[in-house]
Amino acid sequence: MSEPIDISQRWDQLRERLGELDRRLDEGRDIDASELSARLSARTRQWAKAVQPPVLGEQLEVLNFSISSERYAIGSEHVAQVLPLNQYTPLPNTPGHVLGIVNVRGRIVSVLDLRVLFERPHGSLSDRSFLLILHGQDMEFGLLIDRVLGVARISCASLQKDLANLGGVRARYLLGVTTEQCTVLDGARLLGDPDLRVMAE
Image 1 (tube, rainbow, N blue to C red):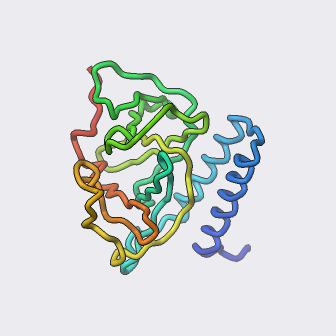
Image 2: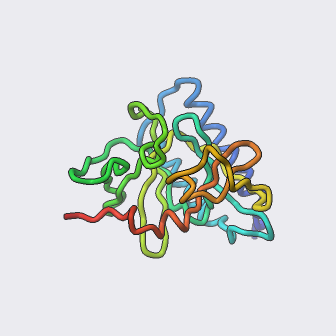
Image 3: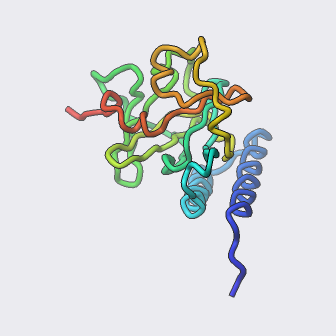
């Protein structure tokens, strides 16, 4: 019988795989879409196996990602999948922050653009955009992101919560900002907000 792999070893393996994927993307090598999707799905399954309660003492386990050169993070317990965003279907008569909908293995999932919701500068979509799918008890939706930066644990006590440049709607979904200027989102509040629910007419 093989020795059990502890959680730290699992995260080390995941970080290595993330690093390998980033290197291949940065070097400009083309990765077949099906291969990329298979890798991301496998990584998602490993995250699910390795998931622990999000708060360990004063430590919060988060997934780091980037949007328009800004760094964000969200509790890993809210993350269901990360997929390449190959295409989406726009929805008429929806708020500007609703990019559209996608079909994820037979499920219709809405896609939100945080750049619009948070009133941040934004341009056209990148060829390498990704879909970060969040799930809760009563809601599931995807966030448009540029890239995954990895998994980390942060100290809840070190989060800054009262910053002048984080007012308005962005403060509504904020847990705090790390000393490295990474904005940590409140996944429970995002998933529990009825205003973010996309209703089909």
